[in-house]
Image (cartoon, chains in turn green, red):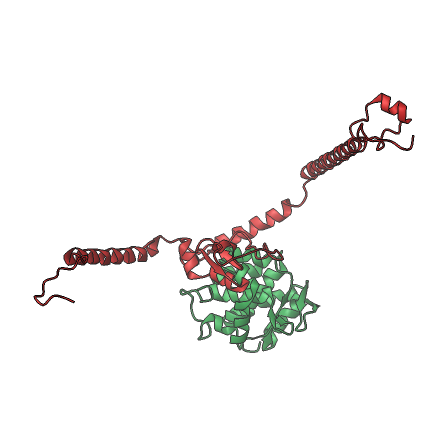
Length: 168
Length: 209
């Protein structure tokens, strides 16, 4: 089924990787048209293309809690579970900031604490601007390093509860 | 109404039980065979891994169109989204996408539901190719000039065609008005070049002159 996690995927934090996203949000993503049309049968390669087309990040917006493409791609990554090297490749990519942010978000969700700090702290130096969609649907300005800071210090980001990492 | 002696002297048709027993058995065997063969159509090992759709699914093609449908119309003319692979109609765009992404349809296309895993090299090369494409696909000088030339040529052709069409229309209109007597010099003289629209047929009496 298109919504099942890859059978060869390992469990993350003791659970099916897709369960890191809570049920309601997961259902919303599975029902969205972006998921059905564009995220079908994506592999890590084709996901690269989609990630490059991203132009904003965000959780859910609107009265109906519609999911952003960023969320859909995150769930897709959780579903196919690319290897760590591929995720690091996403993070290392200098040219496309949204690819970087996507990789960082995914690593924060599935990575061990050492990996998280090791790969995400260098991103504090990236002070490029990114566009973020707030809950009411409007966009606001943010920066990559602000987002990374949010990932590393807070518990909750883009409508997903982040797994616990020890304080630095 | 059988006669008392139990003899059947009606003219009823009789069937040969044995023959029909054999036919029934044969039919069952055939059905079993058909069922079995349809089950292992393509052995799972041979099915290709799930492939991403290259094209965009067009959901709005028939939006806003009015169409007459009847109960007996073939399925591809009924209301809703038609799947030609499975020969079925789905009433809803969301369900249509679910159907297209679903097991039956993909099996019919010969693809298993498993997605192939990509390696690191594939991802890296993908990054590079897309980056290169974006860098080049912008305008190199030569391509830019060629495109400009093409556009100019197309515009000129369009203008020419428009002019020709206008000329033709004028000519047609002129012919209609004159009733085919434009070229007649006598009419022009007699009517003081009022030949247009004044004399349509030879039997028409002109009251003004």
